[in-house]
Length: 226
Image 1 (cartoon, rainbow, N blue to C red):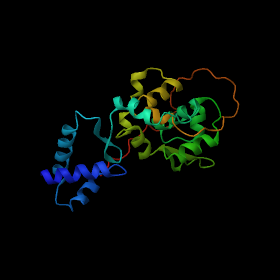
Image 2: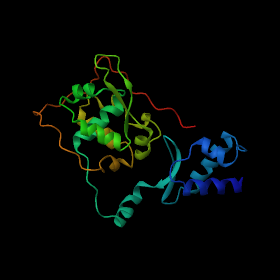
Image 3: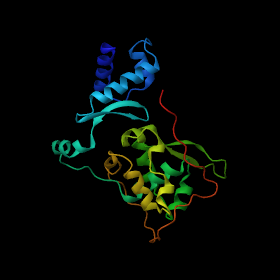
Image 4: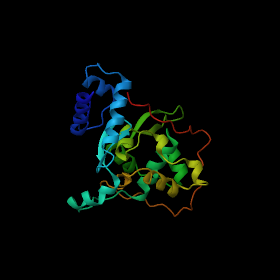
């Protein structure tokens, strides 16, 4: 198995994206079973425990990435900070993550303000949200949900890795956004993005208890990678 371990390690280190179990099976021309592959992954995790790179499982599979405590050193190579998304964008993303699938109207009801269409388009362009269908209601509004790319960028394997709302008590939208932003060591990715057009001017609104509308389904975790 030593040769197989070397092959898998090389593929994971050189891959441009996470490798699913199906990808790994293809790597070995289906000569290794899922149990064998999991054993190799566990061995690699152990071998890299003392290094600055770790093997992690994300939504689309497995990949190597730098450990959180290495971030400050790696940032020295690229000291310029990218523009950041506004708080409104992060709050909207958090609502989608926790309450999906939701319509734009649902999001506006929860936030208490009108949502700029450019805001949703930016999240779609980033690959973090997508339209997965339409609600059977007048106008058939689009239903938004997060993508596996969103989970990968945060270093999460499923929506279940987000902090549970129950642990937050009567959460308002800002606390919900903080929960998403603090869900992983890659949380700064949520704030690193292109500048967005300001939202339409809205009157100040008080903190809103984040209770989902009666007809909103609970968030569903994406399927486990092959």
